[in-house]
Length: 262
Image (cartoon, rainbow, N blue to C red; front, side):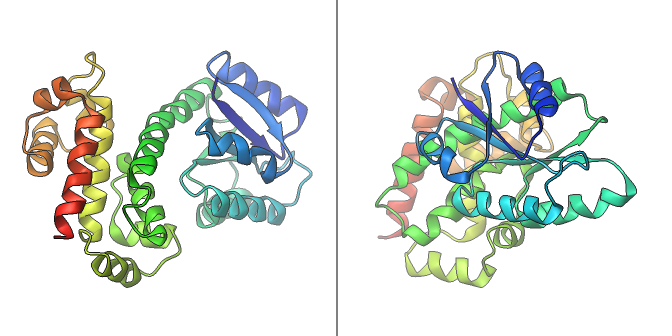
């Protein structure tokens, strides 16, 4: 069973999260980042939740420091901030985003069961990210791997090169130069591949139509998604689905990287 790590939380909040997630994952409280390293390395960590609410005795600065450390240790694993919804706390949400938070859950405002479903849906992106991470070992420079994996993990979020660079605390030009030096496609192309790879995984589920996948991934419509799959993979979504989904798309992705180096 996958694990949801909760940091800086009191017993009441931890029980609320346990009730919201039910049997869908194991909700565990942690006090130290090192304690989740082995879970994260096995690809079994869904996300980390950091309790930043006013009822938490931990100072906000400690919360931000923890978020920064979590992000540095595991940049592709989602970090969820649990915060109060009030004028006094509005700046905390912005600061949390700068520190590395992927999403926020508003205490006593958001329905925790709905929020739990949203967080669990991130697992699909995480699974694709880990699979691609394994496939990329030894094929790209280590300093670029973070950019590749970020593009996949956030493929639903309409990532831009500028946004990715800011999130990864890198200069856009630096990323472009690293890719060019390694004879790899430009940044926008890598981001596009991230969207194609995640779409390929979602299309493995026969219950999902192309329109459903397009909506889930924030494409304008199914036609736009079809065009992107055709442009990157030279096939239709049906061909992709029947040919193996993610594994087929990943094979073509690796081939595209190799061809770029010729």
